[in-house]
Image (cartoon, rainbow, N blue to C red):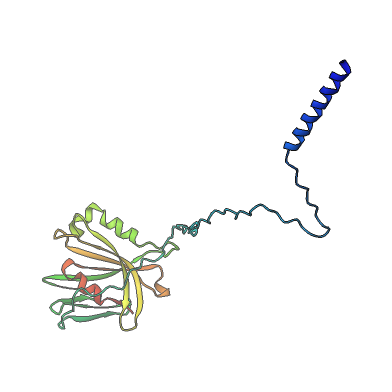
Length: 226
């Protein structure tokens, strides 16, 4: 009896095991790669995602020029334009010793070789020793005169200080340089020019031109260092 029961259980177990094996799908055989050939992939190849390049504007390097402090040894400006056309009645003046020519009103009388005057004004030329240097800043002389309280009756309370460049229109050439002190209003009576003579023999000498404020501009516009 016991032997018979054991055989029945063994047969049932084998039947269940066979049923289980029948339910499992058969596994596909693993393909083999022939020598020298690559196995084709069955997966779809996805395109590579790329990020669009972003253009960056590069600002060119700009060098800031270095600021240099310069020292000018000659005061220079654009050649002056005569303020007005001089009247034909104005006389010509020449002084070879002072190396200068200019014009002055015809009603004035020439008093010396360096001065002329009339009822409405005057001009006067003189020289002053002033040693030339590497930093020849004649404007310092004009500043001193402009700020001298004793000269206030001549130049007024607020005089102007300007550079001067002699210019010969006929030769189109510079004829000296200097500075000017002139009145800024009606309270000044005179104007003054300090000029450096370009001649080598006059290197350490200045030419001074004084004139009444009303005629100074016209006389100055005709001044030539010869």
